[in-house]
Image: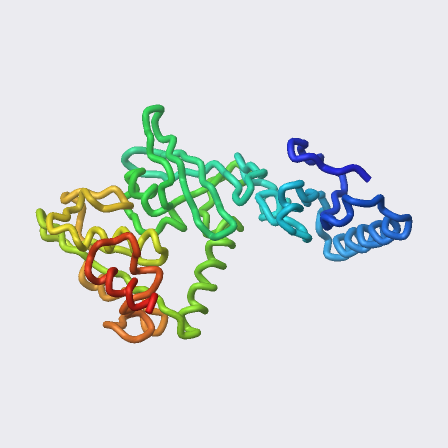
Length: 302
């Protein structure tokens, strides 16, 4: 049995075993080899029973991962989706440490197709690098921001408006397996909220120039920091939006939509213990000089 080097690429049609670090210090005994053969035969038989096309996508642990004490199969871009899930998707690429890439697009009746590269991460994050024109430098756009950037008339429905090519046809992301990690992250987040942990509801800021309300979604620490810094800016305006490129000419969100703030208990909640946070490690920052963050940092250390 040969050790897989860090620089060596895996080959399709080959079997790879992830072994603990201790196996490197001594040769494998015949009984160990026999046990591996039995395991691989059982795995192949189980795949055939489930009608699954077996292609080896596991890789052996690198020396660095073994040194860190990892002793199991490594989840990466090779293992995120099965061959059946992505068989007919054009422009699909495996191999990233924690993501896959696929060609995507969004169609505007006025401007035509805007094409980009969608990165799907195991964490559930989605990023799009726009390639609508040779000079476009928009990178790491959210699907909603890409949808808006493309000029799509009916925006805010990116799951249906952003598409990939499947068997030569444009198919919405919502009808593919590409959103399974995104949906899983939403589900786990909802379960955390229902379990009593802090959930931050959406907040709004009013532009000092056009007087329109703009929504801030507070799902991650980065989003909370963006809202926190913006709320301290007395001259904040639409052009300062940290995500979703926006100007004062863009329409304001309807009042009937603003009542939906992302509370896990009730969609139209006006504020409860499930969605209103009075301070936590996600929405308070030790490197911020505002009095609220200073008091939180001092009290948390006490």
